Amino acid sequence: MTPICANLQAVRGRIAAACAACGRDPGGVTLLAVSKTWPADRLREAAAAGQPAFGENYVQEAVAKMDALLDLSLEWHFIGPLQSNKTRAVAERFAWVHSVERLKTAERLSAQRPAILPPLQVCLQVNVSGEASKSGCAPDDAVDLARAVAALPGLRLRGLMAIPEPTDDRALLRSRFALLRGLRDGIAGRGLNLDTLSMGMSDDLEIAIAEGATLVRVGTAIFGERPRGATPP
Ligand SMILES: *Cc1c(COP(=O)(O)O)cnc(C)c1O
Image 1 (cartoon, helix red, strand yellow):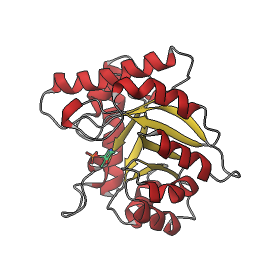
Image 2 (cartoon, protein in one colour):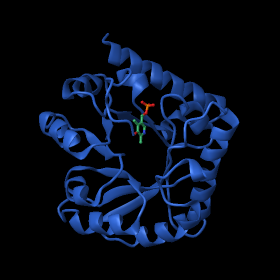
Image 3 (tube, protein in one colour):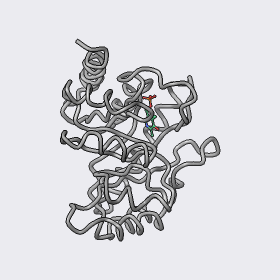
């Protein structure tokens, strides 16, 4: 068994245990393998071990890997900061985007989504850490943004995503995930069907699952520590 295969099994085991601990069905949690900075052959190894969905942060790097892995049928998720001059490649090549935080970006993605493809599935990134973070829309703006994004023809709004600021305070972290969950419930209560809560990474997926994560984004625990000098998220 390769290290990546063993790591994937371990992560799947953690997800199953976390679900069991809070009475959830493990089938309700999708594992996204975050493969930023890793070369295509590592992704191929993960795919051979049964992993179909990959998360990438940098558009050019991701597109090169997609081209190298065209023989596989993989699902690509864009999870990094989205610059407006990169939206076309994202709209053309990815199945999902987790990091939409402004209507303007969503409108570009919708307009640039090729008509022959199904709508691009999107999560709105919400800043759940207040002053400590600059990424994501303010929680107070999430409802209006969700309404506007849900109306765009090239997109399908699936849910909310957050990256809480790192902290050793588990209770604080849990409260950040709970905030995202509460926002999702509030928006869903206004008639928008949001089925996805994208939250939880290598260090905190158990806490995120306890707070209702339906998709966890896991890099290090699958592929190992990223190469030094790799750009942080
Ligand atoms: C890098 C990254 C991850 C994975 O983080 P790990 O701690 O390596 O599991 C998850 N989500 C986003 C948005 C990232 O940029």
